[in-house]
Length: 305
Image (cartoon, rainbow, N blue to C red; front, side, top):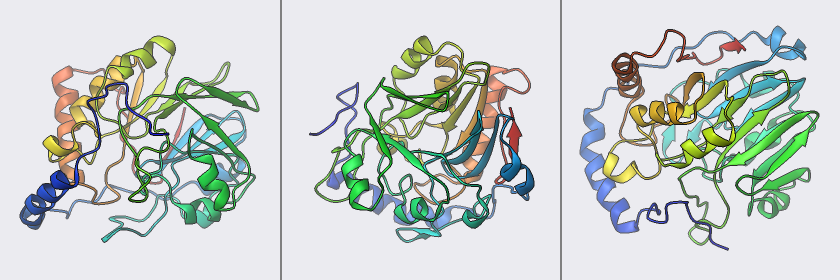
Protein backbone atom coordinates (compact mmCIF):
# COMPACT_ATOMS: atom_id res chain seq x y z
CA UNK A 1 0.00 0.00 0.00
CA UNK A 2 1.32 3.44 -0.97
CA UNK A 3 -0.38 6.42 0.64
CA UNK A 4 -0.96 9.80 -1.01
CA UNK A 5 -1.81 13.34 0.01
CA UNK A 6 -5.23 14.95 -0.29
CA UNK A 7 -3.54 17.04 -2.97
CA UNK A 8 -2.08 14.37 -5.27
CA UNK A 9 0.34 16.88 -6.81
CA UNK A 10 2.19 17.20 -3.49
CA UNK A 11 4.62 14.31 -3.91
CA UNK A 12 8.15 13.53 -2.64
CA UNK A 13 10.97 15.18 -4.55
CA UNK A 14 12.92 13.16 -7.09
CA UNK A 15 16.52 12.14 -6.47
CA UNK A 16 17.49 14.57 -9.24
CA UNK A 17 15.87 17.42 -7.31
CA UNK A 18 17.56 16.25 -4.12
CA UNK A 19 20.95 16.38 -5.85
CA UNK A 20 20.20 19.88 -7.15
CA UNK A 21 19.33 21.07 -3.64
CA UNK A 22 22.48 19.54 -2.17
CA UNK A 23 24.64 21.28 -4.79
CA UNK A 24 23.00 24.62 -4.00
CA UNK A 25 23.22 23.97 -0.28
CA UNK A 26 26.98 23.37 -0.24
CA UNK A 27 27.69 27.04 -0.86
CA UNK A 28 24.75 28.57 1.00
CA UNK A 29 25.34 26.79 4.31
CA UNK A 30 28.87 28.18 4.58
CA UNK A 31 27.36 31.68 4.68
CA UNK A 32 24.74 30.89 7.32
CA UNK A 33 25.03 32.21 10.87
CA UNK A 34 24.16 29.55 13.44
CA UNK A 35 25.41 31.52 16.44
CA UNK A 36 21.86 32.11 17.71
CA UNK A 37 20.58 29.32 19.93
CA UNK A 38 16.96 28.91 20.94
CA UNK A 39 16.77 29.85 24.65
CA UNK A 40 16.41 27.19 27.31
CA UNK A 41 15.24 27.16 30.92
CA UNK A 42 15.72 24.60 33.65
CA UNK A 43 12.69 22.29 33.61
CA UNK A 44 10.42 22.11 36.64
CA UNK A 45 10.96 18.40 37.23
CA UNK A 46 9.12 18.41 40.54
CA UNK A 47 5.97 19.66 38.82
CA UNK A 48 6.34 17.35 35.82
CA UNK A 49 6.58 14.26 38.01
CA UNK A 50 3.86 15.26 40.47
CA UNK A 51 1.31 16.74 38.07
CA UNK A 52 -1.79 14.62 37.54
CA UNK A 53 -4.49 17.30 37.39
CA UNK A 54 -3.28 20.47 35.65
CA UNK A 55 -3.22 20.64 31.82
CA UNK A 56 0.31 21.57 30.77
CA UNK A 57 2.75 21.27 27.92
CA UNK A 58 6.54 21.31 27.96
CA UNK A 59 8.72 21.80 24.89
CA UNK A 60 11.54 19.27 24.79
CA UNK A 61 12.74 20.42 21.37
CA UNK A 62 12.03 19.98 17.65
CA UNK A 63 8.58 18.30 17.51
CA UNK A 64 8.84 16.67 20.93
CA UNK A 65 6.46 17.90 23.64
CA UNK A 66 5.38 16.47 26.95
CA UNK A 67 1.64 17.12 27.12
CA UNK A 68 -0.03 16.49 30.47
CA UNK A 69 -3.77 16.12 30.05
CA UNK A 70 -6.35 14.46 32.31
CA UNK A 71 -3.68 12.64 34.27
CA UNK A 72 -2.00 11.26 31.14
CA UNK A 73 1.63 11.94 30.27
CA UNK A 74 1.67 12.21 26.47
CA UNK A 75 4.78 12.64 24.31
CA UNK A 76 4.73 13.73 20.68
CA UNK A 77 7.34 12.48 18.19
CA UNK A 78 9.94 11.65 20.86
CA UNK A 79 13.45 12.31 19.54
CA UNK A 80 16.35 12.79 21.95
CA UNK A 81 19.01 11.84 19.38
CA UNK A 82 22.30 13.73 19.66
CA UNK A 83 22.76 13.49 15.91
CA UNK A 84 20.60 13.06 12.80
CA UNK A 85 22.58 11.93 9.75
CA UNK A 86 25.70 14.13 9.76
CA UNK A 87 24.22 16.97 11.80
CA UNK A 88 24.63 17.17 15.56
CA UNK A 89 21.92 18.57 17.76
CA UNK A 90 22.14 22.37 18.03
CA UNK A 91 21.02 22.54 21.67
CA UNK A 92 20.38 19.92 24.37
CA UNK A 93 16.82 18.63 24.85
CA UNK A 94 14.75 20.74 27.22
CA UNK A 95 14.31 17.76 29.54
CA UNK A 96 16.84 14.93 29.64
CA UNK A 97 15.23 11.63 28.72
CA UNK A 98 16.30 10.14 32.06
CA UNK A 99 14.40 12.95 33.83
CA UNK A 100 11.09 12.38 32.04
CA UNK A 101 8.10 11.16 34.07
CA UNK A 102 6.59 7.77 33.16
CA UNK A 103 4.87 8.07 29.79
CA UNK A 104 1.36 6.77 29.12
CA UNK A 105 0.87 7.70 25.45
CA UNK A 106 3.29 8.31 22.58
CA UNK A 107 1.99 9.99 19.42
CA UNK A 108 3.93 9.41 16.19
CA UNK A 109 3.06 11.72 13.30
CA UNK A 110 5.09 9.86 10.65
CA UNK A 111 8.16 7.72 10.23
CA UNK A 112 10.86 10.21 9.19
CA UNK A 113 13.93 9.89 11.39
CA UNK A 114 13.54 13.31 13.00
CA UNK A 115 10.09 12.23 14.25
CA UNK A 116 10.49 8.51 14.92
CA UNK A 117 13.61 7.54 16.86
CA UNK A 118 13.56 3.94 18.06
CA UNK A 119 16.23 4.45 20.72
CA UNK A 120 14.26 7.30 22.29
CA UNK A 121 11.06 5.22 22.29
CA UNK A 122 12.82 2.42 24.13
CA UNK A 123 14.46 4.70 26.69
CA UNK A 124 11.25 6.39 27.82
CA UNK A 125 9.81 4.91 31.00
CA UNK A 126 6.18 3.99 31.53
CA UNK A 127 3.43 1.85 30.04
CA UNK A 128 3.77 3.60 26.65
CA UNK A 129 0.82 3.00 24.38
CA UNK A 130 1.90 4.10 20.91
CA UNK A 131 -0.67 5.75 18.62
CA UNK A 132 0.72 5.66 15.10
CA UNK A 133 -0.30 6.15 11.46
CA UNK A 134 -1.72 3.21 9.55
CA UNK A 135 1.04 1.12 7.99
CA UNK A 136 3.53 1.66 10.81
CA UNK A 137 2.42 -0.78 13.52
CA UNK A 138 4.03 -3.91 12.06
CA UNK A 139 7.39 -2.17 11.75
CA UNK A 140 7.23 -1.13 15.39
CA UNK A 141 6.19 -4.59 16.55
CA UNK A 142 9.32 -5.95 14.89
CA UNK A 143 11.26 -3.47 17.04
CA UNK A 144 9.76 -4.96 20.20
CA UNK A 145 6.78 -2.69 20.90
CA UNK A 146 3.45 -4.36 21.64
CA UNK A 147 0.94 -1.75 22.86
CA UNK A 148 0.17 -0.02 19.56
CA UNK A 149 -2.95 1.63 18.16
CA UNK A 150 -2.91 2.29 14.41
CA UNK A 151 -5.09 5.04 12.91
CA UNK A 152 -5.89 6.40 9.47
CA UNK A 153 -7.02 9.98 8.83
CA UNK A 154 -10.14 11.00 10.77
CA UNK A 155 -10.04 7.87 12.91
CA UNK A 156 -9.73 8.16 16.69
CA UNK A 157 -8.97 6.24 19.85
CA UNK A 158 -9.77 6.95 23.51
CA UNK A 159 -7.51 6.37 26.48
CA UNK A 160 -8.63 7.26 30.02
CA UNK A 161 -11.11 9.85 28.81
CA UNK A 162 -8.85 11.57 26.28
CA UNK A 163 -9.81 11.15 22.63
CA UNK A 164 -6.97 11.16 20.11
CA UNK A 165 -8.01 12.02 16.54
CA UNK A 166 -5.55 11.40 13.69
CA UNK A 167 -5.91 14.20 11.13
CA UNK A 168 -4.40 14.85 7.69
CA UNK A 169 -1.17 16.63 6.89
CA UNK A 170 0.53 17.30 3.56
CA UNK A 171 3.78 15.42 3.71
CA UNK A 172 5.34 12.05 2.85
CA UNK A 173 7.48 9.47 4.58
CA UNK A 174 10.41 7.12 4.06
CA UNK A 175 12.91 5.25 6.23
CA UNK A 176 14.54 3.07 3.56
CA UNK A 177 14.95 3.22 -0.20
CA UNK A 178 12.02 0.86 -0.71
CA UNK A 179 9.34 1.95 1.79
CA UNK A 180 8.39 5.41 0.48
CA UNK A 181 4.86 6.29 1.64
CA UNK A 182 4.18 2.77 2.91
CA UNK A 183 2.69 4.32 6.05
CA UNK A 184 0.48 7.36 6.57
CA UNK A 185 1.48 10.77 7.98
CA UNK A 186 -0.58 13.33 9.85
CA UNK A 187 -1.26 15.23 13.05
CA UNK A 188 -3.34 14.68 16.18
CA UNK A 189 -6.16 16.52 17.90
CA UNK A 190 -6.50 15.72 21.61
CA UNK A 191 -9.90 16.29 23.23
CA UNK A 192 -11.35 15.80 26.68
CA UNK A 193 -14.44 17.25 28.28
CA UNK A 194 -13.65 20.32 30.42
CA UNK A 195 -10.02 20.36 29.27
CA UNK A 196 -8.10 22.28 26.60
CA UNK A 197 -8.18 20.87 23.06
CA UNK A 198 -4.66 20.54 21.66
CA UNK A 199 -3.75 20.18 17.99
CA UNK A 200 -0.31 18.77 17.17
CA UNK A 201 0.22 19.34 13.45
CA UNK A 202 3.18 17.03 12.87
CA UNK A 203 5.03 17.89 9.65
CA UNK A 204 3.11 19.52 6.81
CA UNK A 205 3.15 21.80 3.85
CA UNK A 206 0.32 24.29 3.54
CA UNK A 207 -2.95 22.78 2.25
CA UNK A 208 -6.71 23.16 2.51
CA UNK A 209 -6.86 20.37 5.08
CA UNK A 210 -6.15 22.89 7.84
CA UNK A 211 -9.54 24.47 7.15
CA UNK A 212 -11.24 21.08 7.29
CA UNK A 213 -9.56 20.34 10.62
CA UNK A 214 -10.95 23.63 11.90
CA UNK A 215 -14.43 22.73 10.65
CA UNK A 216 -14.38 19.33 12.34
CA UNK A 217 -12.80 20.59 15.56
CA UNK A 218 -14.14 24.12 16.09
CA UNK A 219 -12.81 24.52 19.63
CA UNK A 220 -9.02 24.10 19.37
CA UNK A 221 -7.32 25.91 22.23
CA UNK A 222 -3.66 25.34 21.33
CA UNK A 223 -2.05 24.54 17.98
CA UNK A 224 1.51 23.20 17.96
CA UNK A 225 2.74 24.23 14.51
CA UNK A 226 6.03 23.66 12.63
CA UNK A 227 7.93 26.75 11.45
CA UNK A 228 11.33 25.39 10.33
CA UNK A 229 12.93 23.39 7.50
CA UNK A 230 11.25 25.50 4.79
CA UNK A 231 14.26 26.85 2.85
CA UNK A 232 14.69 26.61 -0.13
CA UNK A 233 10.98 26.98 -0.66
CA UNK A 234 11.08 25.56 -4.21
CA UNK A 235 12.24 22.28 -2.68
CA UNK A 236 10.67 22.24 0.79
CA UNK A 237 7.41 24.04 0.03
CA UNK A 238 5.08 21.10 -0.60
CA UNK A 239 6.16 19.34 2.60
CA UNK A 240 7.05 22.09 5.11
CA UNK A 241 5.15 25.29 5.84
CA UNK A 242 6.98 28.59 6.06
CA UNK A 243 6.52 30.58 9.28
CA UNK A 244 3.95 32.72 7.47
CA UNK A 245 2.07 29.67 6.23
CA UNK A 246 2.17 28.18 9.73
CA UNK A 247 0.32 31.22 11.06
CA UNK A 248 -2.18 30.99 8.20
CA UNK A 249 -2.73 27.31 9.00
CA UNK A 250 -3.28 28.24 12.65
CA UNK A 251 -5.92 30.77 11.58
CA UNK A 252 -7.48 28.29 9.15
CA UNK A 253 -7.87 25.81 11.99
CA UNK A 254 -9.48 28.48 14.17
CA UNK A 255 -7.16 27.80 17.10
CA UNK A 256 -6.82 30.28 19.95
CA UNK A 257 -3.11 29.96 20.73
CA UNK A 258 -0.09 29.12 18.57
CA UNK A 259 3.10 27.42 19.75
CA UNK A 260 5.96 27.08 17.23
CA UNK A 261 7.98 23.87 16.92
CA UNK A 262 10.18 22.01 14.40
CA UNK A 263 13.00 24.53 14.54
CA UNK A 264 16.09 25.19 16.59
CA UNK A 265 17.17 21.61 17.32
CA UNK A 266 18.66 20.24 14.09
CA UNK A 267 19.95 21.54 10.74
CA UNK A 268 17.32 19.97 8.49
CA UNK A 269 17.19 22.53 5.68
CA UNK A 270 18.82 25.85 4.77
CA UNK A 271 16.96 28.14 7.19
CA UNK A 272 18.42 28.98 10.60
CA UNK A 273 16.52 29.20 13.90
CA UNK A 274 16.96 32.99 13.91
CA UNK A 275 15.57 33.30 10.38
CA UNK A 276 12.52 31.21 11.27
CA UNK A 277 11.77 33.29 14.37
CA UNK A 278 12.38 36.59 12.57
CA UNK A 279 9.89 35.68 9.86
CA UNK A 280 7.39 34.43 12.42
CA UNK A 281 7.62 37.62 14.49
CA UNK A 282 7.36 39.84 11.41
CA UNK A 283 4.20 38.03 10.32
CA UNK A 284 2.71 38.33 13.81
CA UNK A 285 3.18 42.09 13.56
CA UNK A 286 1.81 42.25 10.02
CA UNK A 287 -1.31 40.32 11.01
CA UNK A 288 -1.68 42.37 14.21
CA UNK A 289 -2.46 39.27 16.21
CA UNK A 290 -3.71 39.90 19.70
CA UNK A 291 -1.19 39.81 22.52
CA UNK A 292 -0.77 36.28 23.80
CA UNK A 293 -2.01 34.59 20.61
CA UNK A 294 1.50 33.22 20.00
CA UNK A 295 3.50 31.59 22.77
CA UNK A 296 7.18 31.05 21.88
CA UNK A 297 8.51 28.56 24.40
CA UNK A 298 12.14 28.15 25.42
CA UNK A 299 13.37 24.59 25.54
CA UNK A 300 12.38 23.07 28.87
CA UNK A 301 9.61 25.55 29.71
CA UNK A 302 6.28 24.26 30.97
CA UNK A 303 3.18 26.20 30.00
CA UNK A 304 0.31 25.51 32.36
CA UNK A 305 -2.78 25.66 30.19
